[in-house]
Image 1 (cartoon, rainbow, N blue to C red):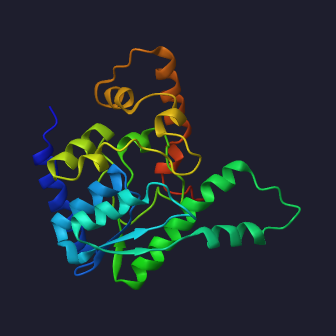
Image 2 (image 1 turned 60 degrees about the vertical axis):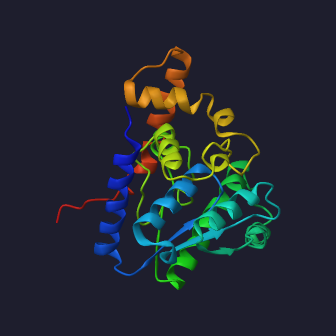
Length: 243
């Protein structure tokens, strides 16, 4: 029963209102991966602000096998874009680490998205911008993002929309089908999102919206991930002195 036209129009109005209140005349700046989320956010910003106020940042780490999808998107939307290869930054930081410090596999995996976000903010502050977050509700529900990496931004058009709903908006906006239906991967370890998660987005989305899931083991896994990763959606805990 999802009404893609209605939600799209409401989201476009919301983006316009955000910029009216938080950056009148500023540009929307976002990382472009070539997947559905960054494609839909970019398209929504173009509809809300016009293509001259949307800037994409493509950030391969060395060679990126699917970077053609990112170029397809910026060409389709006609938006200004920068290509910034972050490999030297990643290698430089790893090389600067003390020899006695053993860098964990998780640290190595999460370093590129954190450097990417620092890169997007550097571009944004140089281009009179506001950074668009591209996470969706399905990813946020199970913590499928890097804290202080792709999980942050100045405004977030998709954080209350599931993967299924984001795809519907992408098709409504007339984005190329290969971008909207592109199999999502984390771009970090070479696996698809669903391989990493242990369940499909269709199963997750149905559980989020309807509370229905057929496999009790997958239900338990989703519930566990949701509980473990709620901290990513909350403000940093602060000591509150009684003064």
